[in-house]
Image (cartoon, rainbow, N blue to C red):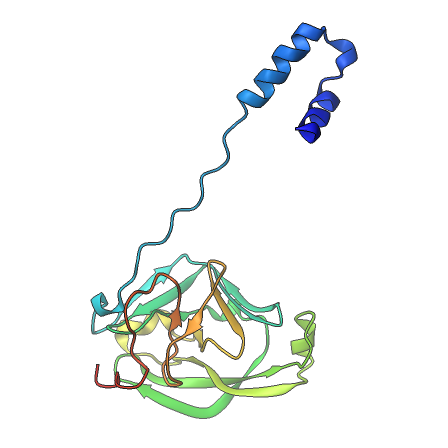
Amino acid sequence: MLTSLAHFTRKYPLSVLPLFTVLITFAAYFLYRAPPAPAMPPKAPLNPFTFPRPPLLERTPRHLQVKWQDVVIADTKDAFWVLETTHPPTYYLPPSSILAPVAKSSHSSFCEWKGRATYWDIMLPKKASSIEDFIEGKGDKIRNRIWSYENPTDGFKPIKDYVSFYAGPWDCYVDGELVKPQPGDFYGGWVTSEIVGQVKGGPGTWGW
């Protein structure tokens, strides 16, 4: 209250206002201020068992970030997500959102829905304070934790050359929330707090 009063008297000097006017104005100033902005509503639950197969591809306006030691190496609000039965969403980021250099790997894999995947390596500096530390190309090479589809099937042409990150060893965020990796080390879905129920990837789930 004392801080608020000091702010009020700086805005309305007491020397120029009669005492009665000061009291009325002071009361009105605090009683009729705009209410605080409402809190963001929680996101609706997502149950991967309700996702379709074949998978659904659609754009998402969610804010996606990938960080290494708090340095942003990918950042976009113009991504796609793929929703497939029993899997958490897999996010595909536009190539222009990737701020750190990557190099094509010799590794590849095949998806029955999207086609053959290309994998990418990245150098992670031991200590990073800015994106320039990545451009120097020093550090530890992380292999095959980023992938894309250079020639996807017809249903997934929109994500041609878009890039997806496993949720580690870096930190991945969806609208500011730190995600957890999909269980296991094969699939690359991102698990957020809105995901309900089990997801594929852990022991006993490979037949799902």
